[in-house]
Amino acid sequence: MGRQLVLIEMRPHWRLDEASKERGRRGVAAARAALAEASRRVAA
Picture 1 (cartoon, helix red, strand yellow):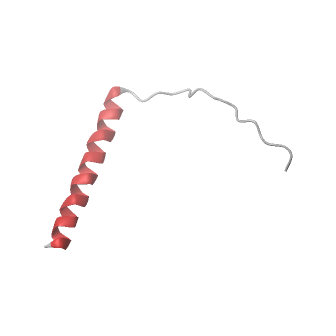
Picture 2 (cartoon, rainbow, N blue to C red; picture 1 turned 90 degrees about the horizontal axis):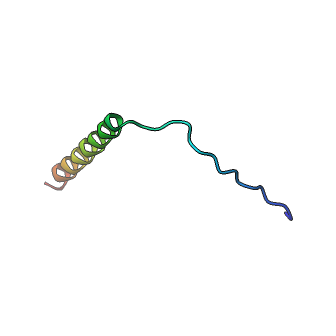
């Protein structure tokens, strides 16, 4: 184990546009709300 692989830094060739980022944020918010609602129902 005297050798170690060298990591290569790569730049991404793509970027998400603002509409895709916002859609993702809304999806995460909806998932969090659903989990919170489920937790409230289980606790009740």
